[in-house]
Image (cartoon, rainbow, N blue to C red; front, side, top):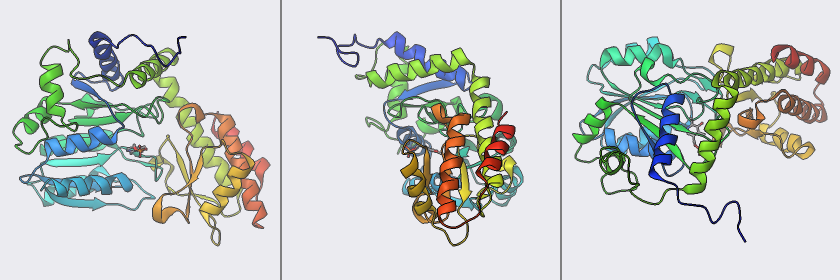
Length: 366
Ligand SMILES: *Cc1c(COP(=O)(O)O)cnc(C)c1O
């Protein structure tokens, strides 16, 4: 008996390479693109350990929880780390980055998260990229939560290491990921004696055994099901058009924000300025005197399938996340989230107007 997930023909090197080429087109890059056989944390960590070492001075921009993780890896590599933290309800500006670079000219590495699904903000990489390039530092970007929801222009922005995963706005699998690598980044890694080699984290191993060998033989067995799912998800994006997929996310974000404001009851967008809000997910501040995790639990009782969660860690009390990405970037999901949150707030005795919220969401999401 054959099974759709089992008994598959081996994934050929040519097919693997063609999936990489599709990712490269999605990222608008002519750089090398490697598909890594693990969730996005694999290339995120692998790229930092390869490119940073004791001689590195890194500007690590913290606009959410992932920036904190990158700083810890950088320090662990022996890099000197200058943290630039901005409040999670805003975004970093190109001017802040320019000032930080001017203060410490020796900075030769900049790490930044594009959009933060966990805090709902997005950073203006189109403006930041040229500032980093002018300074000459290597530019590392986590675009896991932005790709598919907003433009990611690797070459135009001068990104040296850009990491993506398919599990957010691309609506694809979580078990494989990709990183684009510039010539400058390869050179930095080659010169780093501490860059992982003969290691699952190693980007250089893949360069040597896969890219430099002409992408004709895979170094080890690929994550076949995940690769097929990634290919299918790329095909779907190409069929729908990347612009249409991004527009769907922008509409979901605008609808959620407008709907939450019209709902009342003291619910507010967590990210103050709409221009700083990520299209991938909308974060909301729970009204004073309420607990975000409790409100979310109540909302999920009425509809367990809603992509609504409380903020992580210390944010669990105050932050509600509406994760309207991938298949959930729809008006129906946004409406469902507003209705369920409205009910939860009403039960707490807060005065809400669900009809007004839905009207505002529909108008903003048009
Ligand atoms: C989702 C996400 C990742 C991937 O991490 P998971 O914990 O597996 O979800 C990485 N970076 C950012 C900015 C993300 O939003």
